[in-house]
View 1: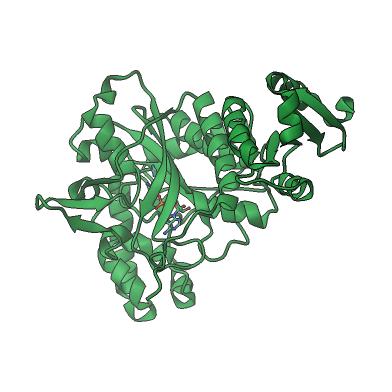
View 2: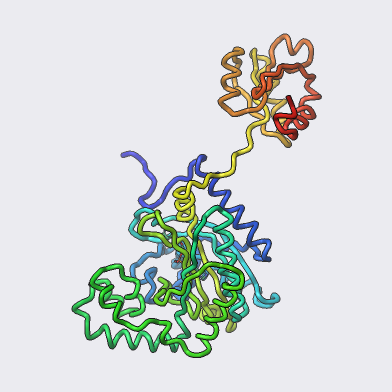
Amino acid sequence: MKLRAVKGTFDILPEDQRLRRHVLSTAERVLEHAGVLELTPPIFEHTEVFTKSVGASSDLVVQHEMYTFTDRGERSLTLRPEFTAGVLRAYIENGLIVWPTPVKLWSYGPIFRAENPQRGRFRQFHQVNCEFLGLDTPLLDAEAIALLYTVLSACGLEGLTVRLGSVGDPEDAAAYNAYLRRELGARQSELSETSRERLRLNPMRVLDSKDAGDQAVIATLKRPLDFLNPDARAHFEGVQAFLTTWGIPFEVDDSIVRGLDYYRRTAFEIHAAGIGAQSALCGGGRYDGLVAALGGPETPGVGWAFGLERVLDALREAGVRAPEAARPALFLVPMDDEAVAEVAALAFRLRQNLTVLHAYAKRNLGKGFKEAERAGARFAGLRGARERERGVYALKDLATGEQLELPEGELAGFLHERLERPLASSL
Ligand code: HAM
């Protein structure tokens, strides 16, 4: 039997790394400039960290999407299906609760969900996640959304629009769910099987259905926004006012529903065209009450996560390329057996601040140059009996064809000087 990666997982090959790093370094720069600090929780937690937070009617629970196992100590553990629960557990456990508010935290790493794989939907994927804790002002929601938008724009995605909604306070959501139970309960025969199941567990999720029959029914219904209490409405309007002032493009989505149960008030997503059915690049919202549900003091919070693979997919669709990799400065070619160890030793010394590669066996001139070119090196450095005798290396500038000889001790200085100057002026 051929060994293969598990369905829904993938290898991240060297050629994929640069665009990933571009997104990650952009996120890190934008977030750290806004005082968001990095927190990395463990990849697995006690299962109750998640069951206490994501909600009994979330897809994670209902559709058994969590990778849960029992360890040798008979503990039930779960590979994280999202960051929020673990970050909040860490926030409570490590006493971050006493830090000046807002406490702004970001995380990056793998996430595990036992979903049916398709384009943009994997069983191991990666999220960049942000949590902003300790304040209930709409300013914090708006800052979170604006930072998310700035990260994605700075990565190179254009024309994005935030879909912004509000699921209200728990009593608003309860009133809306009661309304849906009443309205949809009477029209169950018109609904798909999934929607009938959702109606039983979390009626609001019916609004998420893409089924045409369901959509026809949904079109006749009132929306969650129609049920907002005056405070929740004012909060929602506050978020919009900040985003408008800052020029963050958004549209009010009156039926935004998130797949996790902990959201209150603000809920948002950003979608991209051209990446298939799984078009949500990111999602988030406010979750006042969640810290308390995990055993901490009553603490408001708002956050988001974007799926790295979906953002990469959208970037590739948009033709955004990773910044060019730095080329190796030097490729050393040993021209006899003795030179193999010599070039390896020189490479080690020069690598302190330069990228230096070498061949691992003696090469003739033609093959040596070819290898140096294939490696993308700027200079080839040759070492044979003639060079050894005179204590030098023969250098060829592969960009200009210029050839020269340099004593070993002068190589580092020469390379630095040449590589710092633009090509035209080094001619
Ligand atoms: P979520 O909407 O479940 O939210 O996931 C956020 C993002 O992760 C999605 O928009 C999508 O880009 C990506 N994603 C989700 N599932 C998959 C999958 N199977 N394969 C690939 N990408 C996927 C959360 O996880 C919340 N914890 C976000 C949050 C943070 N809310 C408040 N704070």
